[in-house]
Image (cartoon, rainbow, N blue to C red):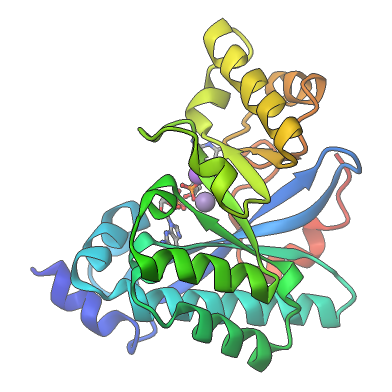
Length: 253
Ligand code: G
Ligand code: G
Ligand code: MN
Ligand code: NA
């Protein structure tokens, strides 16, 4: 039983699929974007979580072709929704390893061209590890992608170790408050203090804020009071198959 060799064949064997989790704009109460999340249906073991196989794929480099497949499928779906008159933005998670590879910009450009999706509808979710990477390739790639017109969202914000100086150096558009802070709401004063600080910081720096892991109405109410821009979590919807997205768009929260 070797997950690594199974992972090598999984792309070709079409064992990966994407699910999409809605992101709700608090001003309108409507879904304005979705986050693409990869799943692996293993022929013997069933569903394997990306928390398990992404680190493995990062270690052996398979994250590069897998990540490219994710981008292509997600952009294809977003372009299809746009053709149906549903102008949803698409958020895609990128691994630091994809930035170090050197061909990311070219791949993103090709995929946008092939699918016809406008760059402004693509939001790349990156982590502090990517921003702290001092390699020339990563820095150059970040700036090339910015030139292309895609947006950057900083994922899991507040859980990294780094200083915050990188926030001024790089072209971010949105901060995603890590779900561990949202989980503390409404009762934990410390979590609330951190969320308020992140929102206040973002306002002064011109970033929007997404709260992830929103699970109940009390959390929604507090995040509204704090003027958080975007909410994501099981309260609104779990990640769903592409076919279910058009129906969810009619919902008004
Ligand atoms: O969807 P789920 O909560 O099981 O995801 C677990 C982790 O896997 C999260 O940290 C998420 O960001 C990551 N993940 C999900 N899909 C992708 C993907 O397509 N690429 C990368 N790099 N990470 C992903
Ligand atoms: O690291 P990243 O933010 O990309 O991870 C997203 C993951 O969070 C997805 O795998 C998704 O399944 C999970 N997730 C989404 N909404 C919720 C939620 O409301 N509560 C919890 N606990 N996890 C969630
Ligand atoms: Mn994410
Ligand atoms: Na996150």
